[in-house]
Each structure stands twice: as C-alpha cells, then as structure tokens.
Length: 251
Length: 296
Image (cartoon, rainbow over all chains, first blue to last red; front, side, top):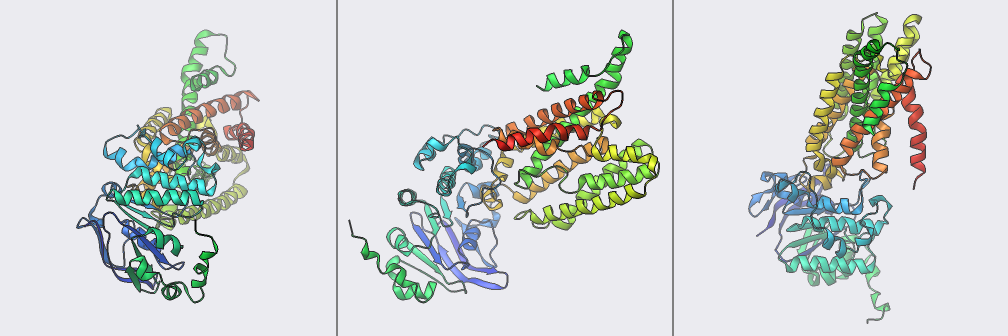
C-alpha cells in the first residue's frame, strides 16, 4: 500500500474529466497515463501530489489522507515534475538542482547550508559541465534534464512526472527510462504522462487511459494498446500514426 | 564599499574652518542624514528584491503596486492644505498602506497560484493615483509646487527618523534571511514550489507585507526615490548574486551605498542649492543599467 486514490472525481469548471477513479499505486511500478490534450492528466497528477483538491473522493498515502499531511512531510515522499516554467529563476543549474533537496534541508534544520552532494544527480543527467551556467542560457532539452535532476535530488518515493519526455533527445529518453526503471526496482513508484504509445508499450508496467469525459481504463499495455482502443482514446485515424514503425529496420 | 560610501557621504560638501562648528555639522546634520540615506537605500533595494521574487519578474520594483502613488497623493493633499512635515509624513505612510490594502483586496484572491491579478490591480491603482496626483499638482498654489515636486522625485532633506529606518532595515534583513531558502524555492513555478513543501500563498503574503512596509516607511520619510529598488537587486542578480542568502544583504548594502553617494552628489553638485536625490539615482542608475543589459 502506498498512494491510493479512492473514488476520485476531477472537474475542470463544470466539465467532468474523471469520474470514480480507483487507483492503488504499487511500489515498484511504472504507470503511464495517456489521454488527449485537456483530458485531465496534469490535473490528476496535481491531485495525486496533494497540491489540488479533487471534486470528489480522496487520496491517501499509507492510509493517511494527503490533506492531513504537513506540506514538508508530503514533499519528503511525493515529488512532482510539472510542465516547464522557470521564468522566475535567475541562478545557475547547480543552484536549481539543489532546490530539490529543500524538504530535507528544512527537516534537518539546515536553513542556510544548502550543500547536499549534487554531483551524482548532475552526472546522471549529463549536467556536470553545465552546472555553473545560468539556467536561462540552456536549451529546452538541457533545461528539462535540469528539472529531472532536481526531482531526482528530492528522492521521492512517489514520483509524478508530467510529460517528462518533452524536449529530450533519444539518448536522454533512454536515460529517463533507465532512471524510472531504477526507481521502480528500488521499490519506489513512478507515474508519468506521455503521448507516445510505443514508449508506453515498451516501458510501462500499467497504463491509465483518460478519455476526458469521466471515463477511464486501467490495465496492462498488452490489454489496452490496440489500434481500436487508441482510436477510441485519441480519435479516428490516429492509429495509423503507429502502424508503420516496421519501416525502421530492427537492429 | 559601503564604508567607503559612508565616508564619502560624510566628507562631501563644504565645512567651515571652525573645528567645533564643523564637528557639530557632522554629528548633528550630516551624520543623521547619511545614516537615513543608507537605511532608505537599503530598504528600497531590499523591497525591490522581495518584489522581484514575489512576482517572479526581474522588472518588479517597490512602487509597482501603487505605493508611491498612494503616498504621493495624500502627502500632496497635506502639503496643499499647508500641513507641517510630520503630518505630511504620516499622510504619506497612510497613503502607502491604503494603496497596499486596495491592491490586496482587489487582486489578492488567487495568490497561491497566480500573481497576475495582484499585479494588474496594483498597476491600475498606480495609474489612478498618478492621474489624481497630476490633478492636485495642476490646481495647487504655485508657491507649494517645488516642495511637492521634491517629494514626488524623492528627497532626503526631510528625513527625521534615521533610528527608526535603521531598526526597520535590520529587522527586515534578519526576517528575510531566515526565509531565504524558502524564497529561493519560491522562484520556481507555484506548483513546483508547493510540491517541494513551501506554503506558497502565506509566503507570498509575507513578502508582500514586508516589501510594502519597507517601501511605505521610506516613502513616508523621503518621498518616492526612484530606481534604487529596481536597479540594485536586478544588477546584483545579473552579476551572480542568485541565492537570497547573499542577494538580500548585498542588496541592502549596495542600495544604501548608492543612495548615500547619490545624496552626497545631490547636496554638492549645485551647492548651496540641492537637487532632489531621486533625480541623481536615475541619472547614475540609467547608464549602469544600460551597460549591464549589454552584457550577454
């Protein structure tokens, strides 16, 4: 038992996005959430992170409602990678990554000394050479790596990632995959939203389809990823996008 | 740097040959004025740094939310009515608080997620106060206009509470230093900051209140001295002072030094007459700022 959503209802204004979602996140699993734009993927992640209230139902961590947890305690267990917005940050890449360690620094009474050992996180995302650069001079993909390293520095037991593949080149998509698998193997849970069924098929243990009208489906990639179900999710004609991948010769 | 600025501020300007009279001028007139200038500059730069963090924008400055407009309007009305300085000062303080309360009431609802409504409310209030100030200026008796203009541009000749300003400066620096790591996190998006355990709305209200109080105090003592609060924290961030733990004390020191220097110039350039120090801060600040912007 870790993070459990119980009869969750999500609304956007008067529109119902998700109705009666029951989801128990298993330690050691990578769960992918798929759905059209505006189907409620980001809203779901914010609710699972305890940062937004659901319209109905509740989310518990080890049986305790998220609303009962002090923010800092929650931040020591649950990490969120929201979609990018670093407009207000003026420091270096190393400063940025170090902020991920904030929940632990405060818990340990370290108000000023912010020198956690960042080297492994910087190295893991190939940021060592960029560490002293101002964050706003980085490319989109490099910035995404910095955001991932910041999340890794938080070391959350539950990692919720909103479109983590954004801007990443194939090498760093592989790096993300290895990281997610490593987290899962260490008994932690990873939830990510994505738009690539191939990636989901290869690397997720379970999938959640959000249809944006209240309906949802939870299952294994083998169960959910058929041309018909993808067209039901994304609209007619979309399955053709993934049907010619045999053009690239298998290695 | 700060010490050199203070020494220069004390030395600038003519002193009589009579040793005793010179000492008296230094300790009773120039000393308190330099002290007040340093504290005002420090408070403005600190308030500017806090506003830039609150609004996640390097162009934010202490007067963004109409503080100077509210203060200016009430102070000018007091001057037009012929009130003495302590009353004008009190009116300016009340005007600042009025502007802050209005901005908070009109735009503060969504501060946990979005600071744009607060920003828009403040900018609208500033515009409204600006129009009313122009109205007061256009109907005020001519002999009171110079005093009004000096207040609007900022002038340190009126300051009579250097001890109060210093107490506020030290208190504000200490309070924000204790918050410095939280403020670092607050530079991230509200959602990300909240996910790291920072209570976004309470911390933002704390910033708003602290920056507003610092600014209101300075405006009530010295009018709307411009540019220090925008330029000093911005320039420091550009030159690598990113973390609040170093940025905030550095801003207080640099802002104080800049205003002492500007005031020394304001007193001496066309002595025995004085210029409003706000003119000098802008004249010194604009070229520095433009030079900094050229840097990649």
